[in-house]
Amino acid sequence: MKIEELKRIFCENLELLNKNAQWLLKSYEKAENIDFSKKELTDEELEVLETLSNRFGRTVDILINKVLRGLDLIELEDVSRKLDVVIRAEKRGFVRDYRILIEIKDLRKELVHEYIQENLKEKFKEVLEKTPILIEIVRKINEYSKRMNYCQYD
Image (cartoon, rainbow, N blue to C red; front, side, top):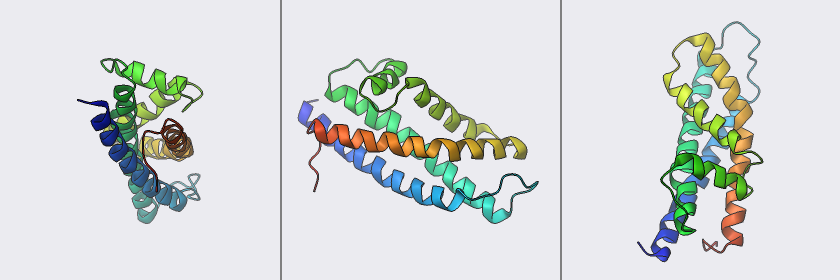
């Protein structure tokens, strides 16, 4: 595949990431004032947190599997090892430590497999803590993409 085609696909995926990040931020704003100290969360609060978690997971998937991998393809990096993809995210300045991305990816995976209500409450708290970090990563990728002249912005 030619570099121009890779850039086009990357830009489409970056646009998809940005849209998902906007929806994630909307959910975050609804969820950030939920009181986790009470014994039981209301059905409405659980619904807000479920939506936040789903959007968090989708955003993480797009970030790692489409956008970061797409950057590596454009920049002719080896994409065979997923660990290298997140390590290069640190080198590009998207995160201060690549392990943050691993934590975010692991949290996404844990959310999918968590069924016990009390454990789920802890995972929801983690999503609330990690969402601003995820949004900041998306912002930095957009700056990088603009600086590298990968995507044409309106």
